[in-house]
Image 1 (cartoon, rainbow, N blue to C red):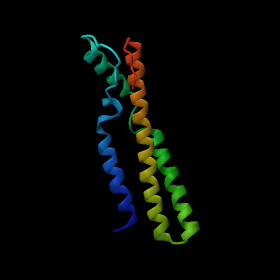
Image 2 (image 1 turned 120 degrees about the vertical axis):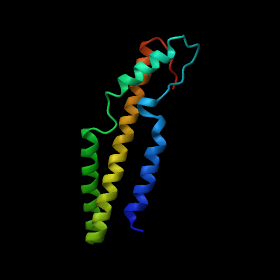
Image 3 (image 1 turned 30 degrees about the vertical axis):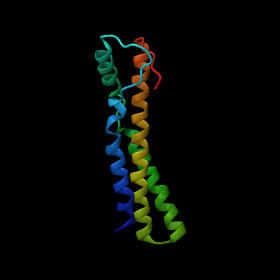
Length: 123
């Protein structure tokens, strides 16, 4: 099995495991919630989708990571195949890191939105 698959498969599995994060995030509220909680949450989750999970920075981060990993492998190992594998792995890891960051930003948008609607958000 080639090294890029050893990295790509766990990365893909990790992204699937993040399905309940990002714009699907439900914050932890301290105290009672009113009858409008579900409506407020749905509206805040909808607002958070304006911060895309994959955006221009995702492609840029993936490309930068691919170049850096490929160059490092070429310098260290001086082998074309290893440099290509490293570049592919770098692109996958860089893209995944950017996606995770964007999901975290979506969660922050939901927390701030819910606070703005009067909820005591603790997490």
